[in-house]
Image (cartoon, rainbow, N blue to C red; front, side, top):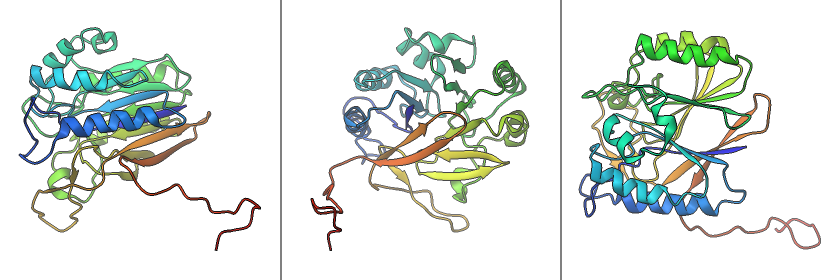
Length: 273
């Protein structure tokens, strides 16, 4: 099974650029086209928050028009730039968004690989939170089938990346979340967004990653007290492959046209030198 993670798309109102420079809607459209042309094509797409830039209804209308072109089922969770009410309204036919009357968390059991989406948002705050109610819900989902391979996905990473201005906006309840996840560490993989960079970590014994954005990247600045900035690095998404058991592999899939592929070998099997 192949899962594509698309995150931090920050779609704006028609005609608006993110930070007056980034055409995030066109970037998302290019990403959707890229994903649809992958061979083999992913089985499912996970869009892990900051779907739009200001949580506005007209932004979700643009976003939905683009992501409805995905050739596979897709699932959404909110980020700190999203609005739960407007997101639910825009995707009223996505029944999984109504598994809870407040939070946009859910479990999907339609594939051998279980998918659990978490809502780490706190209205009015850039950082993430996992309150007692959300943690209790997650524990109950995992305990339903504790030996089942599971992708857990959320917007705010619960671990530090070294990019200070993003780390102050991470999930503030990381220790409590780790306590829930730790008994299942051998069977789960945690996917996050928010940082606009491809990052991998072993956090509390749990394999984690942060997906890159198909739009703009947060500058990789590991200096103390960095100036918050973004760069227009090659856009990308993550492909997570699951081959059964608890084996997961993550690939960076860069979006765009590049030279190649070129063969390593001649037709007779000898190496091209």
